[in-house]
Image (cartoon, rainbow, N blue to C red):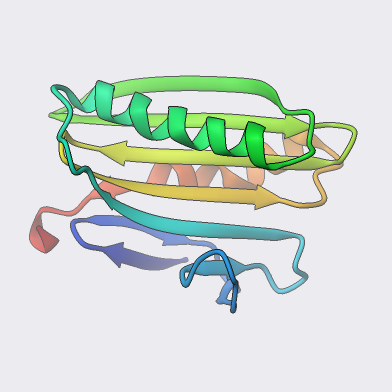
Length: 149
């Protein structure tokens, strides 16, 4: 896997994924077969939150609202987890529409004033557990890189 760096944040980009033109974002990457893709966003909060946990909750709340309002999918929140470590919060919002075979995993790592959001899409998620396994390494690799700060 290649290391992708955005500001003070970094993560392992899955092998074989390439930058693709996309009307929604200049930072969209896609697997060769086109069945999986990811968006990367570095976020500077205009009004810093009091705690990293609050910042992560805010970013995920906005993301969930945009997905439930802007799509025709019937999203089920499969998992919504949050952990804190050394001044940072790590959050995962896992959405799944079984009827459409569509999974979206929003991964956020943040401090009080900035965040990295990696949103992974599995456009042909026929087996949820296979999709979980496919994105586990990417999720665990997201980190703050002090040398880039």
